[in-house]
Image 1 (cartoon, rainbow, N blue to C red):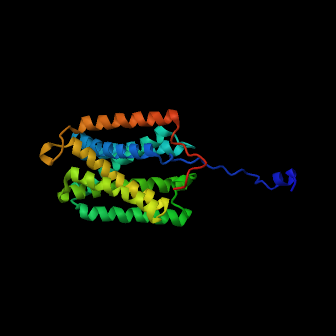
Image 2 (cartoon, rainbow, N blue to C red; image 1 turned 120 degrees about the horizontal axis):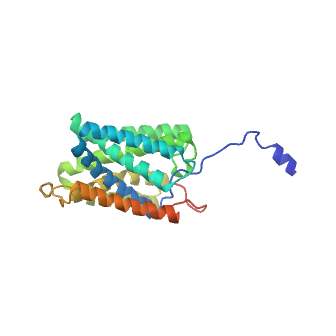
Image 3 (spheres, one colour; image 1 turned 60 degrees about the horizontal axis):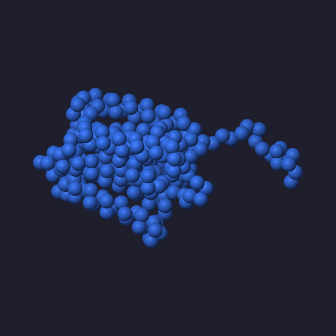
Length: 265
């Protein structure tokens, strides 16, 4: 086939694709993910106590919309924009679960399964539309919309699940131990049990939420509740500083960019 023939076969209007919009799944990814879940938990509680529940939810919703709009305008993965959106999803996801429980009186034993059904529905619609749930194929606006819908559902589900175990007698420290052990299960199942990388990833992703939230609550809440009593504001600021430090490092080092040899997930 001649060069002229190859050129003639090209589409008259070039097809433009986004670069992948999410980071590589490394140890840094999981560390920052756990930090954002804990920070979102304590920040949500702090805002609700300082501003009141309704203004806090309104402010959280506006901040979430702004951060997602900023993320969606990027044509490639940008560390600070991506993780800002994750932080705001964490804050608002916590608020959504708390509003159902505290504001509307819905028990966690009801809301947790409801959020699980919601997450399953997002995954079904995503797969039917795109035939993949891989986070390494987030290269279109539609796939990115499905991705963030799934992320928001995982945060709401994880919040309800973490609060459910804490309220059912395990306490915050017991919940930390439970979910720390639980997050190892999908990794081991993928390595030795044959489950797919996509299934293992999303299972672990859900578990990071109650793990980080339970750990942050154990650090921040009062001793009468079986916690360390460090306070919401200090824990929120400390975890925020840690997030900024890790994200700043990744922005400079680009250690979270995908390489051609990376396995799909």
